[in-house]
Image 1 (cartoon, rainbow over the protein chains, first blue to last red):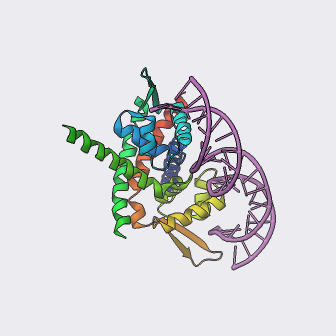
Image 2: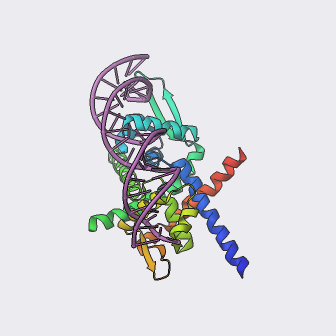
Image 3: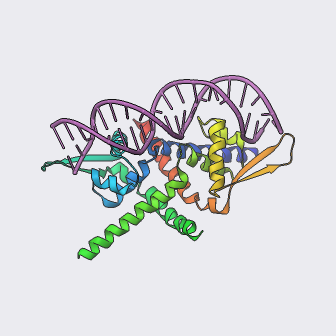
Length: 118
Length: 118
DNA sequence: CCGTATCCCAGCTGATACTG
DNA sequence: CAGTATCAGCTGGGATACGG
């Protein structure tokens, strides 16, 4: 009986650690919003993301994108145009975040109704 | 045809806004980790959460819990013991976050494998 | 045990301006 | 367009100590 309780606790700890591991990569005020922009549009330019993510500055966007690149979640593509066009998209690995983003979008949609209802 | 593209874009915008709305409540370095602790244990004491959420200080935990209370995601229960015991649990509304937490835990579990694999 | 109070600093962040 | 540079303010967050 005690072992069951114990193993149940261990499982909880693991779940909590797993959430922590996920948040390690998704930390920062803007990261998840940026990912959602890139994710829903498949491809997205710097200035577009700047518009999508309400309130972010170019400095922060630049910084957060770099971190996402370092974590192999986002890929940067420079197109040979004049002036330069830069496209951001999710890497294959980044696409595994889709479920998380969708779940957040669903909850956010419902949450908005609750808030507006007040 | 153009209308389809346009409405598709509108849909993307809405999704991005929805994610943004969700993150509005889940902002802060620790909030999601705290919720996962309270959520997986159903009930959790202040000092337990302090242990679960690796790296958080009592000051930050106190502050974040207050914000979660204000947003009606977490409920605070004071038990009449000596010394006082305080239990935190998710409200009914907070429980609607379960799917998000689970999704994050799943991704985090896989992500950990990838990282350790390196 | 469950916090609050105080001190204090690194780094996050916004604003503005500037470059290729 | 896609950033970088610089300045300056604010806040997140640690350490420590204390109160109910």
